[in-house]
Amino acid sequence: MIDRDEALIRVRQWYGVDRGTEVGLHEFELGYVGWLIDPPQPESAPPSTAGVPRVVVDKRTGTTEGWPCLPVQLVAAQYAARRA
Image (cartoon, rainbow, N blue to C red; front, side):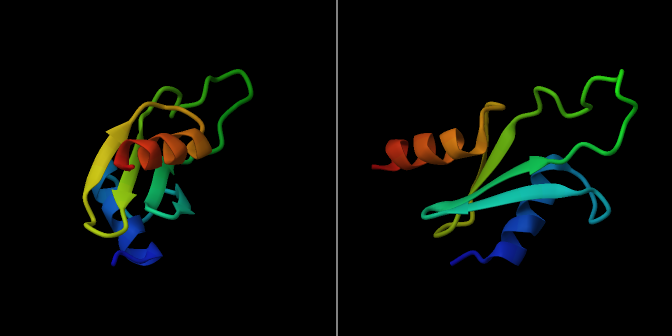
């Protein structure tokens, strides 16, 4: 079973970033949805992570897979529906 700390490690590995890069993590029944968090930028600049895919870490197996840049809750729901 993958815990939150291990999921964070796997999300950072999937994105190829180090511990200094802030990532978000949402836990749901079957796993975790991870995403990159935008560093502070001038208001006129677009978000640097716009369009960057989400990553799902399966709680049971630890496998990671990319998902489209959709709302986190929607990614979790679609992942659960696909696994049903």
